[in-house]
Image (cartoon, rainbow, N blue to C red; front, side):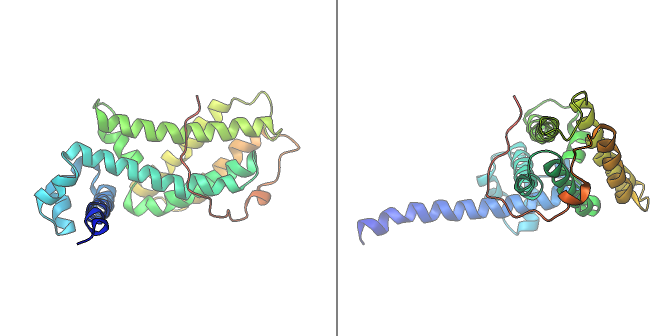
Length: 233
């Protein structure tokens, strides 16, 4: 056996291990969307992946580590679906509108399955620890991105200089929370449309005459290269 063949074995083993771990995380994420992060267990994930408990445990040394991996995977997918495509739009309101449109698209899909951010906040709001820390970090990074887009909208002259950017970000985030409550819990018809109208109303209160019309930001965003979302400092 050649030296190259021997040295390739650890590489192939590592690749297989990463693939197996990705399969486990994917299954755990789907399960958490239905029953919440608190419902996750090594045994439950082993059952749906047709693996042994020891096999799952080999990749995640604890239930907590599995939960954190699920939060991070959810956040990575959120970035790819919501944030990065919006970067193809011009700075200012076109980008902010694209971010909200992508957020709404994902939220609409999650009405049936549930949102890890929202369910996780309910489960871990008063439970300090690494899982709560991972959730807080992920949500805070996204909120910072929304705030940054609003600040850029002011600098581009699309929003009035006296507009309170943190108030705008608060109200926009509130629309998504209300939509989940109305559409998922109460199952009120027309909730998605009301959320979109609410977003337009929020912007209209602070928009300048130079602000681009909503139609100008309605074009589909092109797929963006993979990057990492960073919080505002």
